Length: 402
Image 1 (cartoon, rainbow, N blue to C red):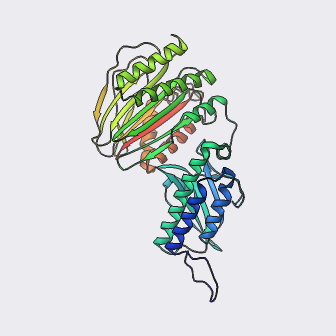
Image 2 (image 1 turned 180 degrees about the horizontal axis):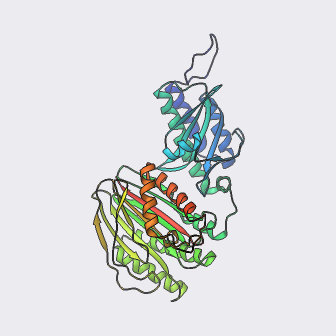
Image 3 (image 1 turned 45 degrees about the vertical axis):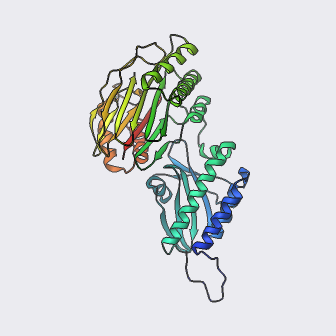
């Protein structure tokens, strides 16, 4: 960014001090900024850094494309595929990517917040010369990510930009329930994905990191459409309520069980799996209420199914569940999934099955880095190998003890 200026020219001052002042001004203006002014504010900041043609490319719900956020001062264009593009490389790897151009260099900066990633900030510069330049650019991208996340709480424009297909009402409900799709902190990382993204109804997941204790739940409500979405909403709400009361896994199961039974009656149920991981020691506990057994991945290979006693799905009034336990090794990953992933029928009529799932987990684990990239790649390749069909909801959730 510090290319030489022609003699006598007054180009932008991109020293660290000036850059910090630009970031401070962006932060000050953002506090009471109406959402429609995000685009011009970001465009002004990019110009202050000596950049041009800024674009905010946001991940679509299917995690296939990066869709441009429209707005004054931002470059227009068509959605960009995540696979095979410089913008997609920055998104998948979570690091800046440069693309040389005739008039300079196009820079793609991941929009990261706590390990979750909204998309990519793209801009063109004459050059990027040193570490100070990259430091300022990364800080700019981090501030823009925080701005987008904050403002998305009270505008529809960001969600509309990400929606590249019609979405069902049930899917709208499910997406409103979800926490960020990924989280990365020094001791633990998680990532999840739902499919079909625009039609999902009964599947969901939730997690929280409270001090050193990671809480995780995956659920699958019976049925399809709004009925399933409503049950999933109650199940996740009951899980969060019980989790925040600091009670044990067995008590959480009982609370969820009563909530579903009281609201929907004896003929309705939700399969679920609730976990707790001590991020300091690697001690994992879980209750399995009708889900497939999780897979333990070590050194990028599935080494075993985490066998456990399985209690009744919530809503059926099961007895106090058995709490299973395992101490993980550093770097271990645990993959949770719902039955829609393995029970889909292939063209010949056979179920896809867990053996094929394990085979593809091993292949994808060797080819991808980071839980977010692994989950996304695994979901997409599994859907392709099932013939592109998803007649039932399917969820993947990956935990890494770091």
